[in-house]
Image (cartoon, rainbow, N blue to C red; front, side, top):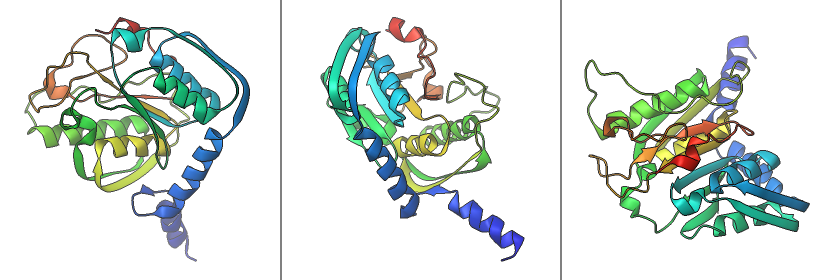
Length: 257
C-alpha cells in the first residue's frame, strides 16, 4: 500500500463519526465495563452535586456529559458512602439525590441531565446541527468552532463584534493533548459535545443552566460558565465547559445564582 493510502486509512480510522459503528461499539463496551466495576468502599464528602459527579468520573475514568440547573439545592454539599457497589450504582444513587435528574448511558459517555425542570423546547442542547467537522485541531479550537456554528445558526453574524470563547480553558497544561478529528451529520449540540469528550483528553463536558427562568432572544434557557457568576449576553449563548478528568471544579460554582 502506498504511503498516501496508509495515511488516508489512518485518518479515516481516527474519525469519530456517526454512521461508523465499530469505534462506537468498542467505546460502549469499555464504558459499560467501567460502570460494572465493583468498589469495596467509596465515599464522597463535602462537595456539591457537580463536584461529586466530576470526581466519580475522574476516579473511575467515566466520560461524562453533565447538564444541570444551578440552584441552592444542587449547590448544597453532599456526604455519601457505599460498600460493594458498582460504579454505575454510585452514579445512579448520586443522581437520585437531586429531584428532576436522570442518568443515561450513551455510546461514549454517561449523561446526567435535567428532566421536567424546564420544557425541552427551551433546552439549547437539543439544537439541531446539519454538519460539524474538525480535522487535526486542539479540543479548544474544536469547541470554539462548534460555538461559532451554534451562534451562526441562532442568529446572523454581527460585524465588528468580539466573540467570546465557547469553552473554558481549564486544568493542567494542554501541550500534550492530542489533536482530534470529529465529523458529524444531522446531529444535535448535545451529541457534538459527546463527540468532543470521546475524541479528546477533556472527558467531561458541563452545561450550567441559570436558575432564572427567563429565556434568551432565541427562546432558550440561559447558560452560565463554571468560571464566573456574571450573566452571559444572549449573543454568546449557549456556553459549556470542557474539563479533563481530575480538573478542579471552580469555586464560582458554589456562588452561582
